[in-house]
Image 1 (cartoon, one colour):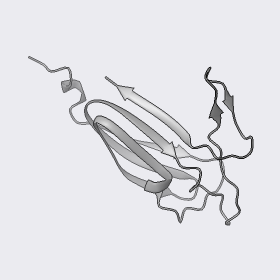
Image 2: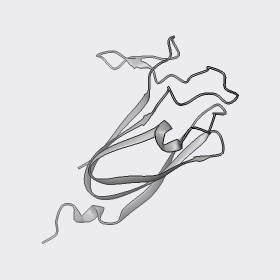
Image 3: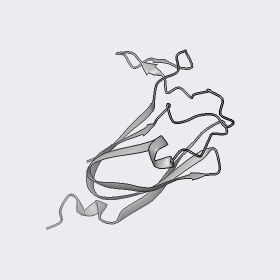
Length: 114
């Protein structure tokens, strides 16, 4: 009998987050972009590609939920300026307030596969 998780066996892939500005890539990529998985998912090999993109690999062997975050406190424009990207603030209805000071919000994505 086939398990409902068999369809995930060996599911592998890669992903990336690209920024529309040159970033200070001296900060460790796995601290700028964090992955907090629950279930049967592994996120690994998080690294900078040039100064505007972070790539990662993943492998799933079953159902999962993962929260991916770009930590705005660690993501700084190239040149050391105190220019921070802003993930925006969502209200209870899901409406966003983006690019409004103080620009202290992480970018957050949640992915799930049952």
